[in-house]
Length: 375
Image (tube, rainbow, N blue to C red; front, side, top):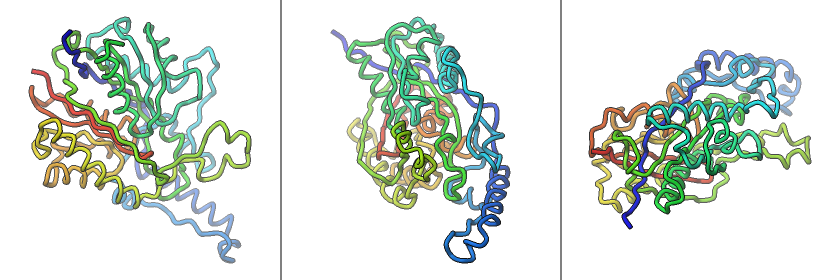
């Protein structure tokens, strides 16, 4: 029996219609800060409350490289009285917000591959923050697309998409499926603390989809998956404690650790060498010279991290062509980031060119997917 080779047949992208610039975000945040400091002036003077510092465009861009981000709920995020995404709650008979985003990304991938939904065997919803515990978002997306077979959710934070790609590839190699959609709807603004100066600017919203198929049924313009590798190392340096168990203690729901928190310097120091080594070693094990990789599609979390990781792998300062960024316009979109980079910056590569899709984030988790443009 001949080996079944999994490939990336196509990718899809759903981008929200609204975006927030750094200037808009800073104006909103600083209005909140001024109000807070005025309301707590006596406590601040007494030393019992810490005065909040304003943000600035210069601070945001120096810290992250982000200039704007797409969002699902702009008005409420910029309202100093709200500062969280809000929309009308949908009934159980209506498609949920995240499923709708995921369906749009899947439809884009299917169209690009010239594939009908009835040809797909499975849907994996791989994302950081699911809208609910159950029924699975993946099953709702499956139903909306009219796909037979099976579906399930998986969460490995910012590495969810690459972990999903390996899972889909393994299903195909084992003969359990021939066509699998890996979809990552991310409403990252929902878990962000917009009142925290160090992180209020980080996240954006988006959805991506990756169609993984057996090579013999894929369109000609596909990418061979030549190797995947996953790694996890437990760390509390990126954490979010929100969950349904918090309902047992409603007083804790508003606590800062129920939203995204991180020890940014520790993350930078520990993740950069881990990921750089992982990419280089995986490339070597596959018979590739890391320095000769045509392109790195890295997780879009922080411009400085990506610059140093790429430098470790390539041995020199990477150009925009070698390590493209979408961080400036999309912000950190968690598991979707590296897929957006691949989706928007891969069509120009030539047959035989090899690159790596790489994610890294909370857990810690990291995933590498080496791909080669089909001849």
